[in-house]
Image (cartoon, rainbow over all chains, first blue to last red; front, side, top):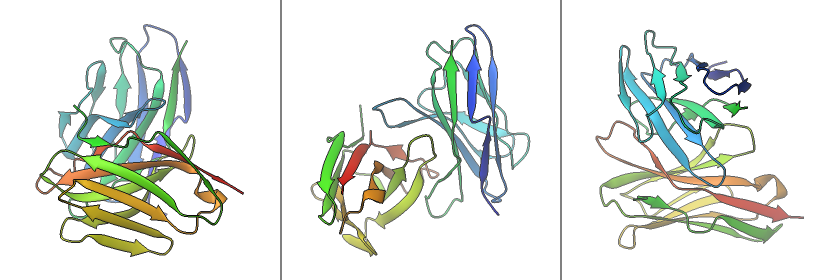
Length: 112
Length: 113
């Protein structure tokens, strides 16, 4: 089945550690996105990539990094520079036409 | 500055009645609007969309209304069912913006049996 797979689903991290969240899609979508959701808040865009080997900062990119070496993969690294990393992270992909995003099931990161 | 706002953080409705979720936007360049539904600890799923050339789009129990002059859209669910209980996000995009969606803060809908 086509879809987006995020891993791990739950992740605990100590302060000062970097952590990488995986996102893989087999929908043949060119565009991929990372969003963050905090309780009571909407989805905020961290980074997006419209094509392989290219990515752009979203609204809250500070403390995060990404890579897009393959069309199928868009990993997100939460660095120690991110001041408040505990959140629910959502990866998404889309074609260029419909505007509809397809989301993964999310990864919940907790910093201890 | 929030370009897409959902002013009601929560809504409680009796099963069988109508649920109306509202969304306001400020950017007049937005021309495509979507609603997503999200259960706890899951990713949002697409529900229904509308382009700015229409003022209504219907899909089963779900209808989205767009009032461009008021920069307002609403999602109607009739009849509401307990399984509809979730957080609903309104999102908007502008042609040429590369599918960059701007999301509202979400409204938590609770449908009581």
